[in-house]
Amino acid sequence: MPRWEAGGGVAHEVNNPVGISLTVASSLERKTALFAAEVARGDLRRSSLNEFLETSRDASSQLVANLNRAAELITSFKQVAATGITRISGSSTSAT
Image (cartoon, rainbow, N blue to C red; front, side, top):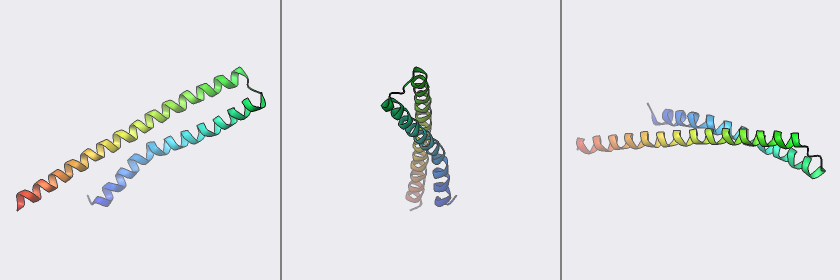
């Protein structure tokens, strides 16, 4: 497989959990702003606080899971790349 094809595959695999994380973080940012506005107006109700806490917990869990997945993929791709480089260097050295 040409290098550019492998690079495209890597980008696609990593882009999925990173894209999901960006979406979750953007949503959390928006909900945090709404929550802060509610607090500033003095309109905070216990139900709003509980909803915000649940949203924050869910978003945190999703962010950790997706960013861990992206980190695992990157580590895996680095190992594959290092193995490929070692094999290429080893084969070119033994060919001389």
